Image (cartoon, rainbow, N blue to C red; front, side, top):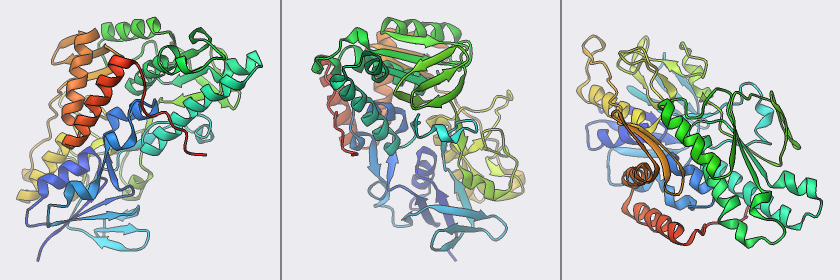
Length: 411
């Protein structure tokens, strides 16, 4: 009888797993609550009107339609019964022989979930569109506002969190507010806008080399971004942000300060870290259940040096390939190899022709880092059409300094 594999989540890890199991002797079901695979590294460009949603998202069915042994289900998984090897959906139950959990993560407000409405995070296409409209609407409201204090609130953009997402958002918003969209407004000048990046630690991009962090900070400040280090958020209201360094009046606040794992993982009743990620075995399996694998942002995995692997696409992709090798060969738990992550480098873009990158000990900044970042992201985009469209959009923006997707449609 054909064995059944269920893959929960069609992000980088889940999609990689599905493709490596395609045309095998297994019956594979991919379950996701959205109908598209999302290229998350470029999500901030949708949020800042540089790209449209279709440029970085592809329907899951179209990616897997040529594989006869793969079925795609658009539904949300409610819980996982590891004892009976069953996945509970909203309207049905599916049994499995092997399970791959690749559910990703969401932004964390560290127990202050009521802040989400005032300070949206960036993890999904919906998040990106909410932020995009929030930014554009702030400029529109500032255009018709004659009260100087209120106009200043609309023109103050606060980004909480100095990781790659926060840095990329700050740089992109600075380009919008200081250089590109600002030309279309008559009631205020570029100098009237203020972009503030808040970071609780002593430097931004803490996972990068210290010199690269300092270079990124310097680049942001040259673009007009005010970087506040050693500053923690104490509260957020519709009037602004309360921090340990004082109150910042603002109507546009964006959250990029932390991640938490999917609540679904709680149903596995396993040991987790503070972010809710499951602490997995060296083969990425769930302790006590060798037929269940947790990969990507959902897994807490320590390498041979005791360092927890970062929540980046390359980790999910490599783990996806690794666990499918175990499943294909049906390797017993005592004979399984240890997963070893090959770090291909980290990079973050700050603005046009500005980026930082660390690749196998090589530290890059400026134009060279930006070109490297651009080529890597174009290469990993799924589908020739997406690569071509994004490349054209980037060339157009580089030459004209004009953003293409500047619509407010949510109202």
